[in-house]
Amino acid sequence: ADMQTADFAATLGSSFTSDLFSANGGYPVLKTSLPSLADCQIAAVRDQVYTGAPIEPALRVFAVAAGKTVELTQGRDFGVFYSDNIDVGTATATLYGRGTWSGETSTQFTIGKAKISSCTIAPVADQVAGSVPCTPALMIANAAGRPLTAGTDYSVVYSNNDTPGIGHVLVVGKGNYEGFSSVDFNIAAGTIEDATLTGVEGYYDFTGAAVEIVPVLTKNGVVLEAGKDYT
Image (tube, rainbow, N blue to C red; front, side, top):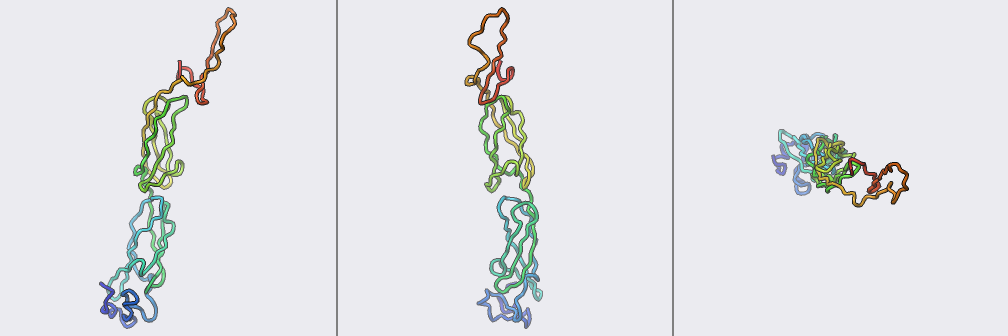
């Protein structure tokens, strides 16, 4: 039904007047008091998904009078204040009357966890094998382009990351994210050409006994392991 008609005003009874249509945007005005949003019906809000930004779904509000149903207009008939509408959980939309409507009412909606698989993991730079496993940091952004924080939004499990070949990272969602994702990266063989050699003297005095030499190779502050990193 169209509220912007004198016929609709007439169906509401003598308590309403239609002589202010041009001033109030086309709504009949209650002579004694303005109609209240508390008497309106709010359509259920579908479940939302976490984005990292405030979520403000459009609302549909209906008034029923004299057997007729009319949909109110957000911004003209009511305003909305959202709360708890960023993180996963239950958000609240509080509606307050505007124009020819008075009172307040509210509705709630659910914000669910985002899938970590819907996020984008930036390619991992090639790594070089060494004495310690390769654990490159990841750069991950959600569907809205917002960066994720390691430890807060996800955790990682590295595997095959201590020898030349293909390393693997399992990404596990946490906090506002759920599910799994993964990324692989290349690990190249390292070189000992730029390693620092210690434990070897320039010459040894003859003693008649075998001289035991224990070389120590250090690279980037890490002692290389004989048998694993060199022979």
